[in-house]
Image 1 (cartoon, rainbow, N blue to C red):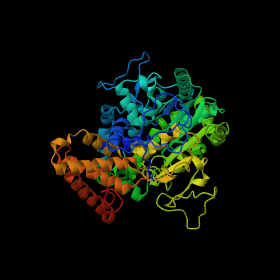
Image 2 (image 1 turned 45 degrees about the vertical axis):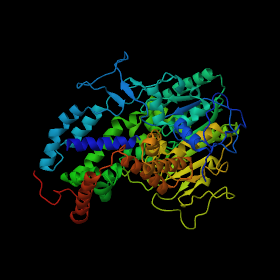
Image 3 (image 1 turned 135 degrees about the vertical axis):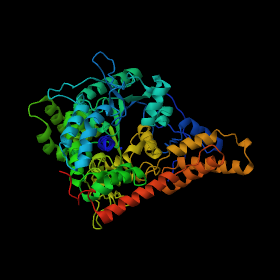
Image 4 (image 1 turned 90 degrees about the vertical axis):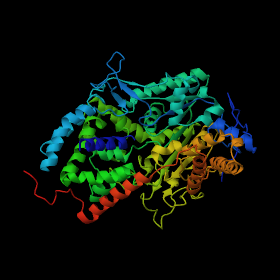
Length: 618
C-alpha cells in the first residue's frame, strides 16, 4: 500500500505537469530568406527519399506564400522540459542519503523516507480499517519531501535550484546530445534546415520558479540572440506553460519592439482547470471517479495497471480512500503548488479569488507577484491586439475534443491537460463528450465558416480567429509527435501574414496523429539494401516506403490511414526479421482479467471498500 500512496502522489504530480496535402519538398536554405522567394517542389522519387532523410520527414510547403525575412526564433518550452538540480549554494548538486541527486524536475521523491514514515501507519490503517492518524502522517511526509521547493512569502526561494541550460547558445553551437534533447522536445529540424540552426534558440527555465525572474532571463537571451545574429527582432514560440511566461513578458514589453511574431503552441493562457481544482481540493470524488475513472483514464483504459489499482484501493474503506486523496491534494498545494509563482500562472482567472484567500497572505511579496501576473493575464488580449496593430503577427495552435484528466471533475473540452478555451484564447466549445446545440449559430466573422465540421468548436469567438488552428482529439503531451502541427508551426515561422485561408494544406480544423514510429521505421527501411531481398520482399518494402512517404507529405489528417500505414511498415519489418513482433498476449490477458474483476465489483459489490459492510476492528 505504500507503493499505492506513492503512485497516487506521482499521479497527481504527473497531472500537474503537465499541449488537401502539401507535397512540396524541403529545400535547405541558409542565411536570410528573401521576401517573396519560392521553395521549389521536387516530384522525383529518389529525391523525395533523400529529402526525408535530411528533413526527418517534416516536409514543408510554402507554395503561394510570401517568405518572411530570417529572424532568430526562441522557443519557451513547456513544463518539465528542462532538468533542475538542488544545489548547496556553492554550485554543487545535493544528493540524498541514497546517493541520488535531489531534482526539482524530474519530481523528486525520497522513497526511503516515505516508506519509513508511511509503511507502519498505513499497515495499521489497513488492519483496523480506520485512519488512526495516517492522513496527518501522510501530510507531514509530503510537506517534508517538498520542503525545498517554491518560495517564501518574502519572495526568496526556499532553496537554490540549478537549471539545465545551453548557455544562451543557438542550437548550432550545441553538442549533438544537446541537439537531440532539444529536437526531442520540439522537433523543429525542418525549420532549422531552412533558417539555419544559428537562428534557433531553446530557452530553459525552472518550471517551479519565479515567473518574473524567468522573464528577466528571457530578456537576456532575446538580447543575446539579436546580438548574435545582428537582427533587430526575434520570433517567440511559447509552448504550454511557456504561454504563461510569455504572458508576463508581453505585459512587461507592451510595445513588442523586439518581437517579429509570436506563435503559441497549446499555450496555458488562462491556466489549467487541473491546477485550480487540485488547489481547491475539487477532485472527482464521485463513485465512478473513485472506483472506475481516476486510474484507468490516467494510465489508459487498455492498460491493466489502472484496473488493478481500482481493485487495490478497495482494501481501504471508502472514506479513508477519499481522505487520502484529499490529503494528497491539500498537502501538495500547501507545500508546493501554492508556493510557486509559475503554478499561480496555471490557476484559471475564474478560480484566482477563491484560491488567493486560501493560500496567499496579504502584504507579502509572493501575493504581490501573483497579483501582478493576474493583471498581466487580464491585459493579455489587449496587449496582443496592440502587438498586431504594431505589425507583430500573433498565431495560435491548440487541441480540443478530450476530457481533462479524470482526477478532477470537469466537463470542459480540452487536450487532457489544459481546457481548450485557455489554449485558444476564448473559442467556444461544447462539452468534451457532446456537440454544440443544434440551434447554435456562429457568433462572429459570419462571412467564413468557423464552426468545426464535428460541431464542437466555434472559432469565431477566440481572440485571433483568422490565425488560430484547432486539432481534434489532440493529446497535449503528444503535440510534438503530430508532424502536421510541427509543419504548420514551421510554415508560420517561415512565412509572412499567414492565416486560415492562406493555404488549403492547413485547414483551420484538423485531426490528430502520431508519426514518430512511422518516421523511425521509415528511416530503418531506407537503410535496407533491397538487392539482398527476394523480389516479393523488395516490392513489399518499397510499397511500404512509398506509402509512408506519401502519408508524411499529407497535411489533412486521416487517423485510420495513419494506423494502416504504420502497421503496413511494421509488418514488413517484422517479416524481414528487423523488428520484433509485439507480444501483447500477457498484457491483454492481464487487462482482461483485472478489468473484468474491477467492473464486476463496481456493478455487483458497489462503489465501496471491501470492509465497508463489515464491522471494523476498533
